[in-house]
Structure formats: structure tokens, C-alpha cells
Length: 301
Image 1 (cartoon, rainbow, N blue to C red):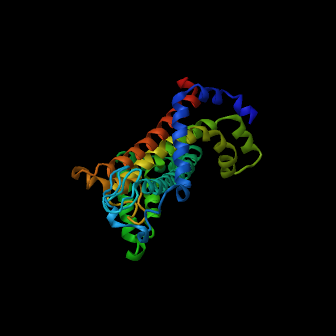
Image 2 (cartoon, rainbow, N blue to C red):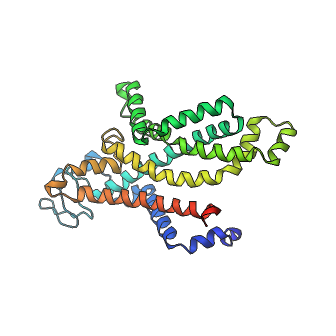
Image 3 (cartoon, rainbow, N blue to C red):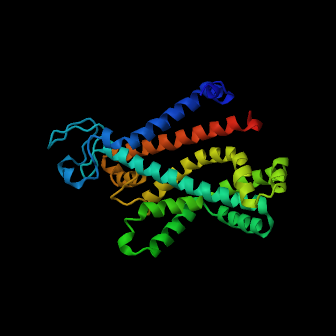
């Protein structure tokens, strides 16, 4: 711990108000999502606890029928919007983190193989990456989501919706990891420690995973942070379009989709607060990722 507190990284962090604020916002939102069961006044997705008479209650104004007051108001079904945002934040973060984890594992593995083994495997993996990069990630995610949903039995589609969503976003974001790791691996495999590992008889997988991988993880962690913001936005976009999280487990994107139906009828809060939460989360993760990139890359100092 003392070594970390005395490091250049921690010194740079304490001198960057933007990094401190963005990290605090991210930590606050993550903790709010984890502790949603304890923070939220109600469980907004428990149909038995909903009262339709509370529908369309404005923020901090008593309902004309029940007299109840809600911090951020309610939606058309009488759900407490503050509670709905906390639970929706949990879904968005879970999907984003799991999708980035999948993309990172797949991209790092393919990047190591392409960079170290080379040959036709390198050509095949990089051509697949080039083809995928010609299409927007959100279109790739929609295609994978549609195909996966079509292959599932009808009775499992709602149950597996979150899993399919993670799979579709993860498979659409692996390219950046693969290209970065491939480039770093091509540099590392020419160094003396890799030659020494070959001389003592280690097989290629041992060399890649035990020796090269630890030396290429620095850029990967930075890319993972930035990709997390993209994954959260992709999940919200898919859910907004109606092909993401189911209504029984709504994310921030689902709440925004519900809110936009009532934007021009005067119930502005149903859209505004979920949208502001998504904006704050994605912007904070992105800003912190940018700071990490600038700090850990000596060429940008």
C-alpha cells in the first residue's frame, strides 16, 4: 500500500480533479446498484406492490389521489422512478461489465495467437477483425442478438435475454483488444526473455500465457475501461430499440424507452432522470478511461 501511495500513478491521480470526480461518480453508482435492495424505497418490479393510482406523479409533489410523495416521481405504472433507476442501473452495469469481460478474454486470446504464431492464423484473425470493423458495433450486436434469439425456443427467450445481450455486445467489441494485443505480442516475442523460454523447452501456450500476457495487459486494462462506457451505451441503445433487456428486468435503456412515450405529454421526468443517470455513468467511465490512457502511455505525457 505504501508503495502505491508513493507511486507516480497515485501522484498523478491526486493532481487530476477530473479523474477524482469521475472515479467518485463511478464508485457511487456501482455501490448504489449493488445496494439497491437496501437504498430503494420500494421494489419497482414487484407487481403486487404497485399502485396504479400513483402513476404520473411529479417529483416531490404529493399524488392527488393517494397523497404519497416520490423523490423523482413515478412512471405510468406507478413505479417509484428513483427505485427503478437504481435497479435499472444494476442491470446496465452487469451487462456492461460481463460484455467487456467476454470481449477482453476473446480479444486477448485471439491477439496472442495472431501475434505469436503468425502465419495463416494471423491472416485469418486479422481479416475477420477488418471485416467486423467495417460495420458499426451496434449493428453487429443487433445481428448477433437477433440470430441468437431466433435460435432459442420461444419459452426461453425472455429468460435468456440478458445472457444473449451480453453475448451480442461482447462479440461486437473484441476487435480493439485483439489488434492491440497482437501488436504488443509481436514486439514482446522478439525479446530475450521469450527466447530464453523457448530454449528451456516451454511450449507456445506456456510462453504466451505465462510470459507474454503479463507484459501486454497494461493497454488492455485501459481499453477495457473505455470499452465499458461503449458497452453500457450499446446496451442502452439495444434496450431502447426494444431488442435488449426484457420489461421484467428493465435497464436504463428500457426506462428511457418508456419515458420517451410520455415526453410530449408533460411527464418529462420519466425520461429525464434515467437519461441523466446513463449520461453521468457513461461520461464518468469514459473520462476516467481517457485519464488512464494518458497517464499510462509515456508518449502522451
